[in-house]
Image 1 (tube, rainbow, N blue to C red):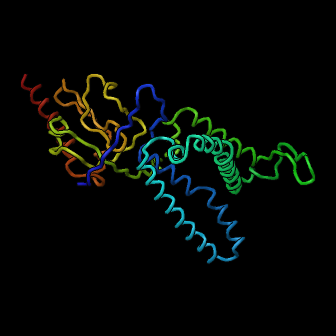
Image 2: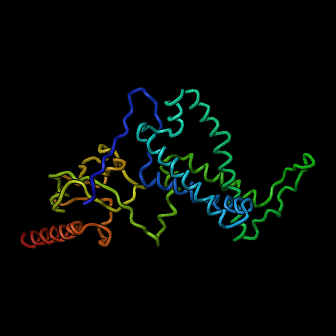
Length: 300
């Protein structure tokens, strides 16, 4: 059995406005992976190679920057543990120095840091997409270059338009809410032919019907995704919660106290190569309940 995991519920003081804490372990991991391994890695490595002039120099630079990145990640991990609030760097600067520095960082991130990063990623996406689709060319003009000065001109190529449209498309999706935004971020790892198991901890309380079926209670590891789920028990009218995730508090199993065998779970017990054997008791219990119901129907 895996070690117990603890989850700290997100609490909000009445009347106090807070950021939405809606990202789970998978969502946060995919954001980090997407920011570290993206189109920028091809552009940056090419520039480094041109500057250092050798493959060994490139590897040395990557090793040094990798060490610096790990150091920064560990520092952020400590800060997140000390200040478990939504807001990231804004919160750390606000608490460490003053609200003014957090405020300035927030606007700098919005106007310069994140804006430039998004633009670079859009350019890289359009450039490498042009390698697959020749029609997306930097030399195919929609608006011919208009010279502003001797060294600067304004233009619009098909490749630039694709980069702009990709940014607008993702921006519109993210304005629709956090749930859709994180779904788009995670969707590359959830395609139908490459279902990779995702494990996390759930808690099944003693005494519920699910415990009686499984034969065990307490903390256990399951395989499921949280793209569509409920978190508030009052939304499950007439049902009781029989399992919930320790990562984000999402309800993982429901059952009906008014029926003899009505149990719903969110993980995948049919993938027996990924989970514990006692989850097979769900199928055995369902078959036994069906047989008993059939026997009662025949005897009446």
